[in-house]
Amino acid sequence: MSPVPSQASTHSWLQALDNYRDWRLLYIFLLGCSSGFPFVLIGSNLSGWLTDTGISRSQVGLLGVVFVVYAINFLWAPLVDRVRLPIVCRLLGHRRGWIFTLQGLMLLATIGLAQTNPVDNLQLLAVFALVIASCAATHDIAIDAYRIEIIGKDSRRVPAASAMSIIGWWTGYSLPGYLAFANAESVGWAGVYSWMAVIVGLLMLFTLIVREPKTDRQALQNAAELRYAGMLNARDNDNPWSRAMVWLSVTIVEPFADFFRRNGWQLAAAILLFVFLFKIGEAFLGRMSIVFYREVGFSNEQIANYSKLVGWGLTIIFTLVGSTINIRYGIVRGLFIGGVAMAASNLMFAWIALVGPKEWLFLATIVVDNFCAAFSTVAFVSLLTWLTGRAFSGAQYALLASLGNLGRTSMSSGSGYLVDALGGNWAFFFVLTALMVIPGLVLLVFIGRKMTQGDSNR
Image (cartoon, rainbow, N blue to C red; front, side, top):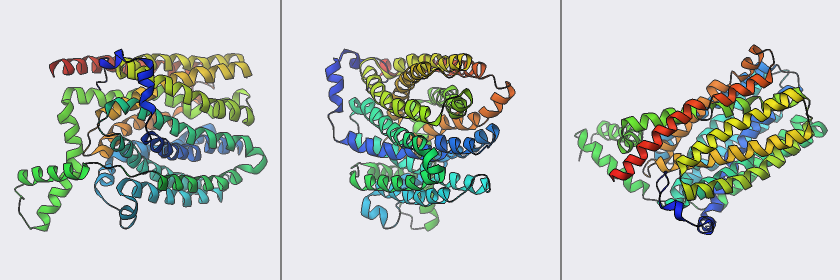
């Protein structure tokens, strides 16, 4: 399916919804839960814990730098595509083996977090958070590749698969987050992290349930090795050094060379810059949202009920709506509309900052924000999926996703400093986050035109 409006625009709504009748989407949903849950551990929960213990806004925001590993995981993503872990990959398969192993490491780090007091040992807490972020960022490479490979070349399922991945992500993020904030005052944050270790164990069980995808990845990689062997004059060469050079060339160079070769340098560069810029404003808002809720006067219970529980249900509904619209009208158009709406929804938070903790306004803001975020995110993930090849799906998707995360994490880690620089003027802060989407939208127009030209040339 082309990411621009084409035959999909003639589909009926029932035909679009029919794309969800596929058991593979259940597997994508379950692994999506595993992808979202680490953001609870080192994101909203950690922010809430640190805020409750009196840690400064600047330190809360700065601790978000651990998410930078999501921005650089493309550096080791080729290894996830090419290296088979001993024993576990043989028993579970290539993708599931990586996912299960990294979940086990996250389980140990979560137990460590539960035993750490942030007031007495903030540095150790940051180390455990970094371990979780590193494992989560790496297992996301395998999860994204799993989604791409199990759907295969059935492009009609791409928006549906993207939607189920997002729904799974938000389920893994919002439901545990709701339970955490709803019970933080009664059991304490250390207690919350203790039973969250149990959830990690449940996610490991999910990994055992899903099926390993059947792909021609190995055949495609073997063909790439033959090409590079010819380029390096290493065919029929028993020299271990020559074989190592071929393997490294295919592992490190070919995933990125293939992306630029398929799209052309001009379009590829525009895509990469767009991915970097598109969600920076949303990230600035998200990083400071819990701090803002608490400072403006909302309780942990209100945050749990509206931001977590209600937000989760709305995200599921709006993601399904957004994916169906994208199936009918095209991904790029959906992205543009979603980007404008996403920026406008940030102004709802500015309204709260001006009038105070009105519960009805909090609910309205959550409704608007979740609709806009879900609509734009499903189109964003669908575009990245559509742009990814099949021989090195983990590395190429990681390259795109990492750039998006780099923009969100590296820049949003200074969100606390920005609020302080504005003198705590939250309303102005949210207006600035709304304006941050403009450069990405300009690039999106260019990308859409280039893709349309490419379709007409083919």
